[in-house]
Image (tube, rainbow, N blue to C red):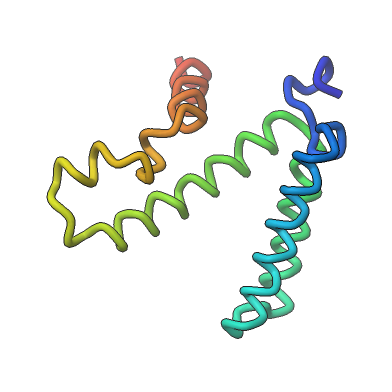
Length: 112
């Protein structure tokens, strides 16, 4: 799969990593239920996202971008009372994550 799409699907990861990711997904779904946000449409969207990851590298990139957009918005909201430099340099800031930087680099290259 990696040779075809450029990435390894979760199902192909070592059992410990796949189990951890599966557990995190199940915990997220449980959290959505507790918060009253596990609507039919939200769960259908979550299913579509999970299925799209296995389709193509382009789908996976769009999924990552959507996730990073949400993570950045969430971080910006939660860090609005922080000192500017503290929020910019924080390891919790998604813009500082290597995966985000790599995705942005790919987007720039594909647009040129």
